[in-house]
Image 1 (cartoon, rainbow, N blue to C red):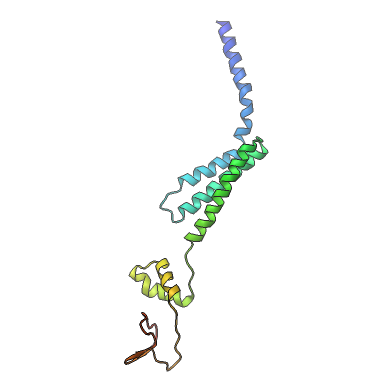
Image 2: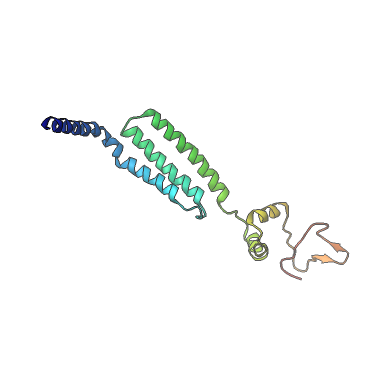
Length: 164
């Protein structure tokens, strides 16, 4: 029995010696990278900017993993893969930021959208399309918008915003 205990103890000691190589895998940078990736996957999809937030967190995780792979464990193939993932995520972040940020209008067009088109449930994208193909005409004081049998708008759809 003493022989079995010695073998068991020897195998436990060997396992501890073998696990000392794992110290770099337990580095704080690696753990922080995994935390960023975990947070990215735990964000609820009901969050308005879910896709953008997911990509930002994934990029942070990949960059930290890249740093860990380059500085602490010296694995060039790992660094290359993490760099590729980081670049792909960065490109996707730029695309998502560009498409998800609201369109900016002039103050006059924004007022028109908020008071006339938004109550009709027309999206900002749809309104932007209308605003791009249309034009805004300003009439001076005493100027006529329309007269009987004559209008300056011709066959276009027009809207009088202020005046009589």
